[in-house]
Image (cartoon, rainbow, N blue to C red):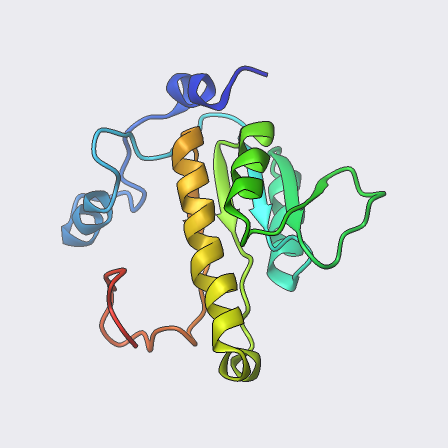
Length: 172
């Protein structure tokens, strides 16, 4: 297939995902990177799903494949070498993440990988930061370098949901 940048150029267009031009959709559009169209595909995409061995990641992979997308899953600790859809990568290793995205050339990275259990996060703040913050930054930088979009999946354990939208710099 052609490189992701060419696929996106041919199939992306500027769109309002809510279907109406109101204040909420204006705020949504304001979050789009300057000079880049919002991602509305006219055809199948090449998706990279991090956290593919987790509950959410597994279901995202199944749903995306069922909808005609090419899906590659990224796992770390629960790798099955017999599953050709999976790639093993430690997302905390920036060089490994860059190499993975360069090799897989995704249109979109669905970043589902995280340490989500509060007891583990509280017991290992350094490890949790490496997994939830540093790895996410590595994915974002590598995706930007490859021209891929990132969809970040989070949890209500991070923010209380009372005053969205949240700035990246906001504290709990």
